[in-house]
Image 1 (tube, one colour):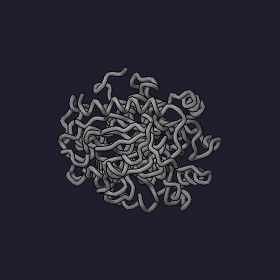
Image 2: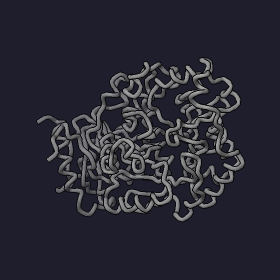
Image 3: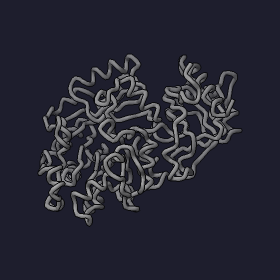
Length: 457
């Protein structure tokens, strides 16, 4: 039997063991030990261990093989990682796993399974409309929400229709059912995809006149849904009730409106860590504003080939306003990544897919290969593998107010882990897309295993 197969078999046993009542983290005896691997804590670059111990649903300790194996008791499941890599479970900062999974023909159960197969242990559910919360609570109580889900309650809809402050019927930043919590309020600063319409991206006075005929035909002449003052009032009302806001803003006019509204909204709104979603078109003058107003941008690194499309719609000298991942990473303290799944590219739910797109200017993707070549990004728009992983772990946890529990590996934190086939920090860029998930654990329990290594059952 290979060491990889032994890893899967032993963890299958760990899954069965962890089903009874969980062991308190105060115990110095581990319920599960993973050793002989590369354990990347994601707390500081270079902080790497060879072993990790779990007690129930919490991390007990990280250290050397000798230190961690000393925590084993007679009933501890001890797993030889065989050199594999352990990371914090991936956190998707922008997804629609519950509401929109049917758009790609999947049930909620299938969408959960897919996310877990990619190593996603937490996800932001970015559009929750009136009536949805109770449905999702019922799912959670029935054990059908397996990845932690953070609900953002919609102030308005994709078409611009306003629901208003219905979210005040709930309490912010609290768990309302197993693995289900209220995270904040979602505001569409500009219209999104409405029915069969294309996304209504809003350009400012600088970029709109520069659109080519093709660009004007594609995007039209749309504008933000709110003035800066009106949006600031919406943000203040949410902040006064304790809710962070997450604002849909693709075009530079929407990004500008969101950031200037946050400036007007004041310190309370900033302290609640507002999110700006998409950030597809960002002008130079907007880059310093994110940190100034306490905003975390959440981007979807689905593919570089879209630059070709935008290059045909804007003069080439303005191509650098599109997908500024590197510039945002350099100018913001926190930068998170999401998938926007299932609205994003095929495969975008996979953090490995997004990692490969973030670190390579010349990535390839099945999402665009059938209709255009994937042009390279500007070299300065790529980020390091370390920063890319932080965008999907520690910074994503920060964006969701979960950094005390998730996003990094440390004693006392929740044991949400992913086991990868190789170390993404040392894997050559060209080979990153070949990394695969062997195991996903939530609360110290195995929620998904690679069935191709050992058949189920």
